[in-house]
Image (cartoon, rainbow, N blue to C red; front, top):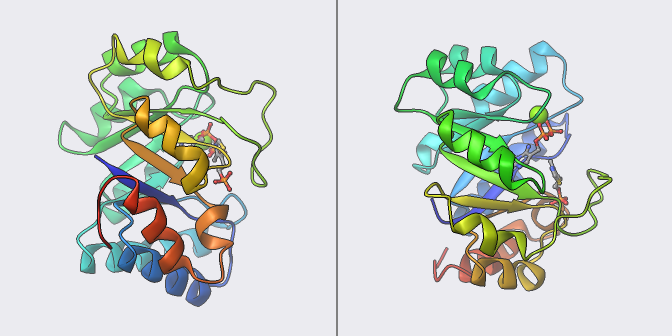
Length: 205
Ligand SMILES: Cc1ncc(COP(=O)(O)OP(=O)(O)O)c(N)n1
Ligand SMILES: Cc1ncsc1CCOP(=O)(O)O
Ligand SMILES: [Mg+2]
């Protein structure tokens, strides 16, 4: 688990979503999360299935945000869960040992420790920087990463306002993956945007 972790925007135009996601995969995105907070059930199923087919063609894992039911229905590679979602231990029990269970830990090392014990595949910290997508009361300080690395064995994902420039010091401090929405989907050339993130990890897209 290393590289750009692409998270999808709230786009209801599936063709547009697929085109930009495919461009970012060509640019070297390592993993994709389907996150559309505005879709209804039918659209979520349609977009989830289409993204899974796309990711399989590119041999990249697809993780579903929030919706365990959709993950099970599609047999996607895993789920990402936050504090108000399904409990991590329940998710691990439902999915079994082979699937990805990602955990939001905000700026809280205690949550990360508990997530690791509950069977999380990776822990995500953030938001680190101002985001156009999500507002947070608490800004995660980069110094948290050094502290977290002392007890974490699972990979660390960083999220929130990521750009290749501001993510670089977080990668230097131990982040294994950088999760981004706007810096890729908001760029007129998502392939090039993804390539700039991939370069942080020495990956050529
Ligand atoms: C990689 C990654 N990190 C954090 C989040 C945020 O999850 P959550 O706190 O559950 O908030 P929503 O994304 O559901 O609004 C994430 N999705 N992915
Ligand atoms: C889902 C989520 N969780 C914390 S920040 C964030 C949004 C990330 O989007 P962007 O990369 O555009 O800031
Ligand atoms: Mg959530």
